[in-house]
Length: 504
Image (tube, rainbow, N blue to C red):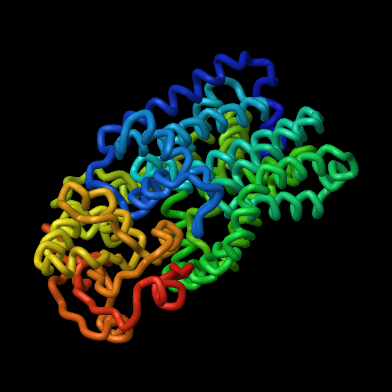
């Protein structure tokens, strides 16, 4: 298919901004209508519980994520209380903004209103976007930063307005405070500009001033990291090891096709961008970040936000090609639309909780997604409360509850107080810092620790329960021990060596 002459047939960039916003808003509204009825269907995810715990302790940094997500959760908590629906609506809002930005990219490429709407709908109905409201997570705010940054770069290049690099730098700085993975996008941009005539842009001061703005915004988190011994570096190593084992290259590529849903459009868009000299550097960005995360063994969804501009360009190029060839070329859309429809049907129960809880478990959908991390937290608190009540008054008076991981600790912080539990402790990730200065306890109720660790830490211990959930779903928590332990030394003396960890 010849795409170069197709661009001559798209309408000039003269449409009113309000009309473009309406096109994008319509696609965003359809996206919202699909996912909103299923908001929070299965319950709190372990990560969401953790982010709320972080929101109770606003800081400039955390072990495993920068501070923006926690501050968003803090604001939601201040306005609406600890509402899962309110939290997930913020993720949904972030993704709807990216839908509008895709329409704006199509407009910048010269598309008319119908093509702008088609680009917005193609992005809005991808499985990746539809999963936005199913989880409150840095991923979605990070995606917004990626798409916004790429849109501003499109404007800076296409309109030859180098001062827009300052705005790009501000978005990049906020992105670095949201999720560190945006650094891969920045590296891809540098590599793409260096490999094309785009390197001329770096002969002016504006990109460098934009970089200075980004680093200035990122500086508070760097200060926090330095004061705490750079824990995120240690965490990144352990996370990468786990991700590499979960996502081998074949799985990575298959999930890219499954979640992205617009691979054909993105591929066409890369060609379209390459054939526009001013935007040629951006044609290299989607394949570069995909390659970077493949080599780094990251999650398949990490590079997908970079596809936004490629999808927009792909729709513009395809529309022009169809216009140039008449109705006969409409047949070429059939396999593209069929592929997208099949992918969407298969992916929808995985990314949106459309099934009932019973159906989700019976169908095995939970094994393809992360829904198992939303099951069983109130039951964990119930079992811990019964174990705590089974202790003697002296054990409770001089004891503490220590959870093995951040999910257990955050769940017990949320569900524990109404059940009579004292404040919970944990050494996992940022929880290691959320503790009293003195920890003199020699008696501990351990939640989630294995027998080997208990034998090493305890002078004596006894099992009180094994974690289970009402659905008997075999998730990461089911079967873990809840045990009473007399420590070999006071808790404060073993904290740093045996309890606290930056590893996932």
